[in-house]
Amino acid sequence: MPKYYWEDFVAGQVAEYGAYEVSADEIKAFATEFDPQPMHLDEEAARASIVGGLCASGWHSCAIMMRIIADGFVLDSASMGATGCPEVKWIAPVRPGDRLRVRVKVLDRRVSKSRPEMGFVNARFDMLNAADLPVMTVTTHMMLERRPTDGAGEPTGAT
Amino acid sequence: MPKYYWEDFVAGQVAEYGAYEVSADEIKAFATEFDPQPMHLDEEAARASIVGGLCASGWHSCAIMMRIIADGFVLDSASMGATGCPEVKWIAPVRPGDRLRVRVKVLDRRVSKSRPEMGFVNARFDMLNAADLPVMTVTTHMMLERRPTDGAGEPTGAT
Image (tube, rainbow over all chains, first blue to last red):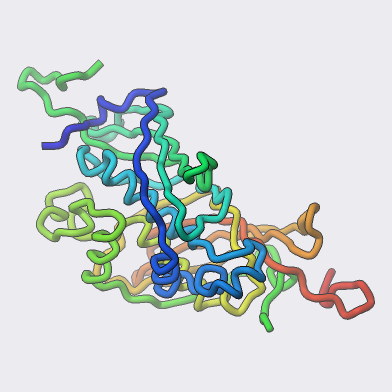
């Protein structure tokens, strides 16, 4: 049984998850498969580029963020996925050896009109490195099941 | 030498790249590493979920899109990366066996004020399946080098 339902995400809540340490090998493996630009694959070429050294693909950063929040709360929740992200901002390069955390802030939520057994939660994810500097910000529309009813037709914990 | 510079991206241009065929094994491998939710890992659990069957993580879809555009034009361009995406929309599930293409539309562009040797290109990427239905839309701010000058101080091909 999931621990967290839609009702458990309240506007203003902040939580932090991680850390996840990124290796050079992992950066290159992801790049080889999905984003083989020199700045993600080759130290020397990366040093000569605008980013000044090997860094993770922005999509790798997104995947790492997903892993951190999956382990942090998504796998314990009645998650139904997400419809998308109204913002993905790559703020600073993610480097080999970076220890990343994700700070989650719940922005707002609403019950689905067409499917009242589920709800949407808008959240902001700030991925931070060990120096507490943001490397990426993502906002997203998560979908979650509402807490099952107690049999009297009212969802337990509904407000 | 790159084939495409900032000057080669003109508002209104449309091009299409792919196809890329997605396998169930690949969907599960990505999910195992980055997004181990049951709908991306287990056929039976996926059938019982809102998506009705195994589907790729949304971040896997983004990574596949990156691979398609990397092979399509990014690796032939003077790409300097991207600052982010003002929109990522997951429209329909990406399924095992889907053959995906990406339709790229150039929205607009501008020269960087602080770094006049580079420019920004805003583009929209629609990822389509074999039935020509959009499964994902991403808009992004790409950074590209401007075409090297001919020595007379004017970038070749500048308008």
